[in-house]
Structures are given as C-alpha cells and as structure tokens.
Image (cartoon, rainbow, N blue to C red; front, side, top):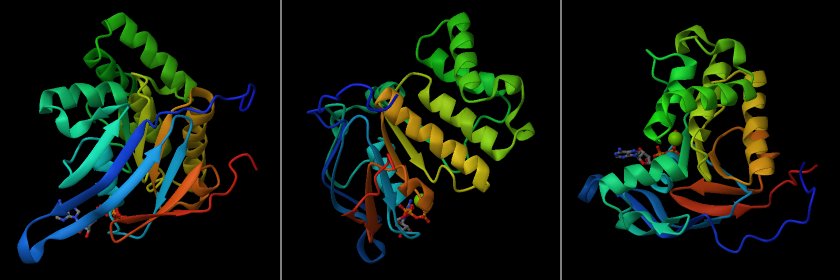
Length: 242
Ligand SMILES: Nc1ncnc2c1ncn2[C@@H]1O[C@H](COP(=O)(O)OP(=O)(O)OP(=O)(O)O)[C@@H](O)[C@H]1O
Ligand SMILES: [Mg+2]
C-alpha cells in the first residue's frame, strides 16, 4: 500500500525535543545521561536510535514517553508540552498518545494474551464487549488468533512481543516507543516484529521511535541517529523502500 497516493507533507512534528537534558543524581555522582538533545519526528516515520550500552537510549525514550521528567529542555508530543502536565494528566495523556514496547515484554503474567490487551482498552473506556472484540482483532492481525487464552509463560518470546505490540496499539496512539524490541528474540521472531513495526508506519502513518543495537532495523528506518554520551547525531539512512 505504500505510496499508493501522493502523500502530503506533515507540517507538524508529532515528537519534538528541544535541548533536552537529563542528569541523574547530584554532585560527584551526577550522570548526564541525555545531553541537550534536539529531535523532531513526524507521522509516518520510523526513527531508529543506535548506540552502545550506557549511551542514554532508554533514558531518552523514557523522557519522550513521559516516564521521566527532563532536568531541562522541552518535550512536545502531538503538540502538548509534557512538562506542563500534572501527573494524573500525564497518565491519561500517555494512555491515549503513546504506546510502549520493551525488550522483556512486560506483560501481566496472571492475565491471558487477550486479557493483557483488553485491560488497556478497558482503561481507555471500552465496554467489556468492545474490548474483547478489539483485542481479538488485534491479536488475530498479529498472528495470535490461536493463542488468545494462553498465559504469557506458555508463549514464545516472539509471541509475547506481538502481544505487547497489540497492547501498545490497542488505543491507536499516534506515537509508539520501542526499547530494544528485538533484543531478547531469536532472529526469525525479531524479523517478524520489525516487519510489524514498519507496517505501522506505512499503513497507519504512526511515528515509531526505536532504540536498538539491531542493525536489521536500520534497513526499515526512515531516519537513523547514533546516541553517544547522551548526544544524538543523525546518520545517513538506508532507503526503506529498497
Ligand atoms: N536510574 C538511574 N540512576 C542513575 N543513573 C542512571 C539511571 N538510569 C541510567 N543511568 C545511567 O545513565 C546512563 C544512560 O543509561 P541508559 O539506560 O539510558 O543507557 P542505554 O543506552 O539505554 O544502555 P543499554 O544499551 O545498556 O540499554 C548510563 O550511564 C547509566 O548508568
Ligand atoms: Mg537501554
């Protein structure tokens, strides 16, 4: 479906960071994990952040996701400055605007695949019946129609990550943040998850921001940044359509 019609250029960035800095701790033990980062990401873009361990990738994603408060600088998501929101407003904002995918899935272990997805939908105001229907649709779409009633521990890593992806997308957030989404998957499952992330960008025009060491993601990225010592540097991207 990609490029079926001429795309209008999206004028407003969905994610905008200006001079964002995060310092952990104080005095002698202070760590400047993110250092004056500027970043704009638009809808329909997959932004990849590469970088060695300790470079600041998770800290940066946590700031974009409103899970951490910056020491200085401003972060706008879909036009809203995160630092102006109260903690209750920030939680509501995160639920609607941001989907999260983590390396170790972070599914609720006592809930089935379907219930993990339904829970987010219920929090988002869906009735029980609506939540069940949408959860099933998403899981079927991600190839898990035969695993609805399984608990996470009964499933492979790749299957668990696809449940996490279904959960992240349940309320159709415009921005999806993925921290090492293939980091604990075998190569085949990793490729499946990478394809699904790219589909979100191509078919639904979402903004996906991924931190990863996985160079395969570079092949589907719209833009690639190297994170080093808390700073970002843009690298030439490979063309995603090749
Ligand atoms: N809660 C914390 N308190 C103090 N320092 C922290 C904290 N979290 C991270 N750091 C430090 O901040 C720096 C960046 O860490 P971060 O987890 O963002 O790196 P990363 O690029 O995600 O690494 P990895 O690839 O290993 O996941 C590191 O020096 C780390 O030790
Ligand atoms: Mg990390």
